Image 1 (cartoon, helix red, strand yellow):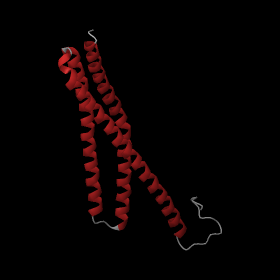
Image 2 (cartoon, rainbow, N blue to C red; image 1 turned 30 degrees about the horizontal axis):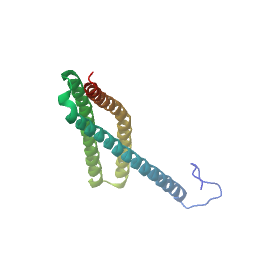
Image 3 (cartoon, one colour; image 1 turned 180 degrees about the horizontal axis):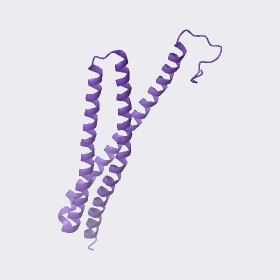
Image 4 (cartoon, rainbow, N blue to C red; image 1 turned 60 degrees about the vertical axis):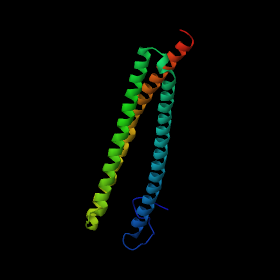
Length: 171
């Protein structure tokens, strides 16, 4: 099928039928790609959150077992680093919930607003474009939150584990 901008020579169609078919086929491909992308991002986010939550659970399990046996400085350092990690992660999740709520409200406002056909299409296209901008920002920003969250959490766990090992070996 020819999806160029020009109607293929020799093809006689009435009105804009060719363009409509071409646009619908393109839109269907874009919709399938977006659905796959959103599914991959959602699964990736779910897995990342699971791993981070498991890491926090492991840290607090270790903390419960050794906190009373290690010195004040390593205990405070581990608690401070883990606290920073938790604040970044929880802050990010709160921001994410706010953004999802804001997007849901905008979608509801658009869907339930009674508009003439042309206005709806323009507003729909603008809403999709805004959602793409927010999604792209969200993906880029997550990297800047993920790495410090993981680094501070792992550092706190390493200090705690190191202090527990040192105490266990009599160092």
